[in-house]
Length: 287
Image (tube, rainbow, N blue to C red; front, side, top):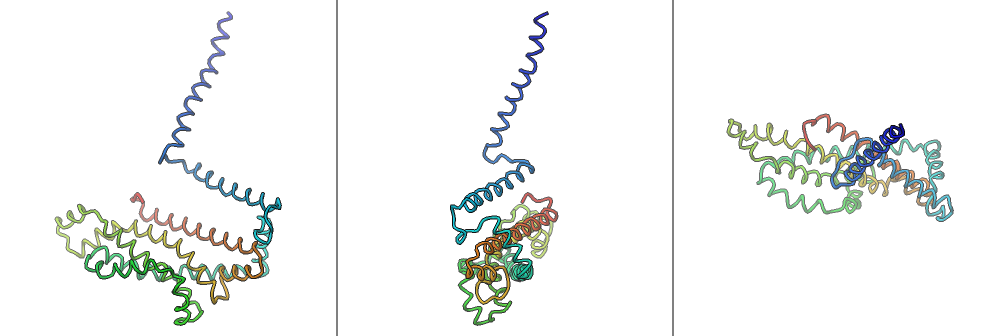
């Protein structure tokens, strides 16, 4: 009779041991190179970093380890953010910055995408434009600001042109590379089926490169956000960059940090929206 309890009590031990053995490979797989993680785990890990960042930030600022003159605490930053919206019409500054980013970016895309497609399609066009485009893409957009102020003044045209110059050459070269890397077997198959040069471009090269072009535009849109702040730091009476400059003169690090965070949040939201649109339009692509 005494053997029966012993045999029954061993079952939970065996089950627990099996669960531990099964959990060990899962932990090893999670740390394996290039091993994917679930969507839930990705969100948790991403949010976890922000939580840790804010905790460390609050520890050093609220604990008195850093002077408020040089770095505001998270609490002070949020109070200054509320003040910006309630007292200084910060929503207008946000609207102006968003308008400048998307205005300059759209202008750059209208010019750069067709030019990039032409460079990737016809090698003679690439030979003509590529040295100049490669040269210009290394020039910082901020270096053109003095000239643009002379040519266009300090109005909206100058700020749009800064973003345009900072984006157009990058988009052009990246689109050209994407189109030029089309699969040769698809092109040859189209020729075999009787396609002409126009049909090759419209039915093979552009559709095949469309997901890559969309991804290029998404990436460069992120760069455009860095150019707009440079454009707004000089000769501007509105925008997030203008607010940051005014806050610097007042040593208000809370408003400066809040402005930086707002830029990051808007950029992150626009990136997610762009990525979602790309996935819907090109669900068949692996990009």
